[in-house]
Length: 207
Length: 252
Image (cartoon, rainbow over all chains, first blue to last red; front, side, top):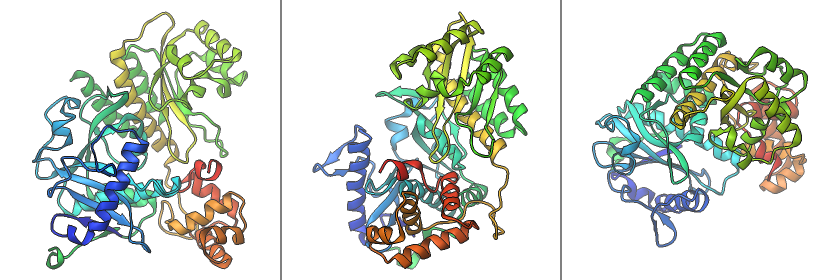
């Protein structure tokens, strides 16, 4: 099951959040060579990992360890597209209560590639469920051009917000991804899912 | 802004395309408006079923010569695709690969056939055979670098539209009413990967820390979900659906 981790329940997930920042460092800094900040040599944490960030975290069924995660930022506050990459949008950066930025999709670097690919699909389905549950009508994000085909073949609807540009040697573009109930139906059919993957926290337990 | 609007319009029309000829028209128009003359979109390897996705408007004489002489497997753009993650100009190809004599011949002959500078957008999808979308200018004509980011996006969206039209005909899994891909657990996938690497149930069990009967059970369940009778069929189906990818089996 994928857990929704917000500032209301993050106390329950301290260990997994720690593991997530370690895995993010190993994936984004060590493997993908992103130029992002590292804390204490082990944790990839940036200025947007605040109380306002919401994470979806998938844990290993037996060890409860972090295996995959994704971060959502409200677009009504400063986020990556509005600060670091606003030049990638031809028009204004999309902002709204019903728009969130999807960032830092991370799968633990320990996993075999096929497990990693299927966990990516799993997290995509979780992201669509999350959007529908929380009234989000589209995600925005920054993607390297080589991932565009994989996103499209997984059933995401992608709207470019500008043309891709060379940023530090990587062809990078800003995109929006509209989410409708049909997005979920297609994603589930594409990957053979019949039931929700999100674990929903009842209001009474949220705190 | 105008260029982005061109891309957006292309995406909308490509999504609405009813068949490959529709998409061919769109690509033909788009290549011309980007300053190219020709396009070729397709898979690089003939898949077993014979459904090679291939659409192009190259001069007929060149297409024929290309097929007769079996140039596809030596096509320098195809070889360079294996080294490239994003689009590249044909004039930069030597930075990606060392051209063989046969590949130099192919390039020279293509120029005689009227093909000039090209831009190849490689398409790598896990578990699927490689493909590309190519835009080619008339020999002797230069290509504006401003057109390349547009071509990069158009190539990706066109390929996905072609994939949808050619390959996404609804499939039904035997014994199931649900179209789509059967769900396999990560444990089942572990067992299938090891089987594909030639491991016996006993060896796989030792590697995974479970009994050989459990390995057997996982594989049997996965076979039932796919409605197939043999492990070979299971591996092929799982690869086709990207539940497994070749790297897991071949480069571990």
